[in-house]
Image 1 (cartoon, rainbow, N blue to C red):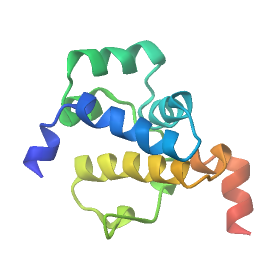
Image 2: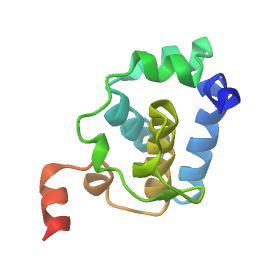
Image 3: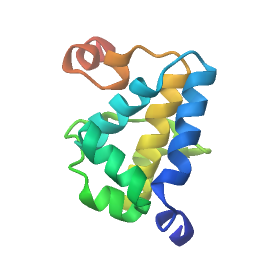
Length: 122
């Protein structure tokens, strides 16, 4: 895990974009889900990419969305809601959001908007 924590976010960011674009989604949508999760604006996200910020520092600077705990499901064979290490859980939250985007899920569901979350619980 230590290796992942020290990996520059900028190394993985283009892969997130490529994954989404292969499925007809856009860089802007990838940025939107990252910014929803982290609380970053466009300038802050771009600064982290340009500076080569590690995942550890990237998430240390983030203000995690209060609805992030609504992110559930499996990434790499592990349920994200059961990951015990807080940093690894945040990284997997991000992976899960990008996966959902690439799978064509509606943005309001990906972003766990209250109306979408309430409709899912019914």
